[in-house]
Length: 168
Image (cartoon, rainbow, N blue to C red; front, side, top):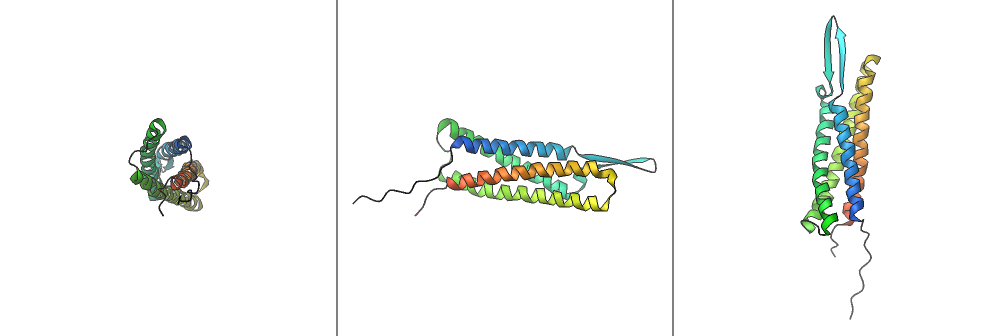
């Protein structure tokens, strides 16, 4: 007796996964550059006070989530390049599970980093005058770029779920 055929699997082509990871990396890199270089200087009684993004914990959390997200995405991009060029997956089933759970964790981590930054920006906007608007708008831009990185990381997470080994 012949066993019934397996249902067709939906597999995303490897180069699509590679492109999504590269776009994620680009968004995160730009977000890191924008938030790390963001600063604000104000004068109080002939003294200039310079405020940087790293002076606020929520922006530090954004920076840390972007750096960790970039490190993970860079590692996964290298694995994707290996898979695209050779056709063999490095690590077999274990790497598929790492892709799946790692993508889930990193995408949620990026989302919380962007959310914390948005919340901090709105709190500062409410408490301050309009002189600090450029600083806050730049912080919002960095958080928005991180949010776009989250969207592409979430798409990568969906793609990695298609590559999970099929177990009965």
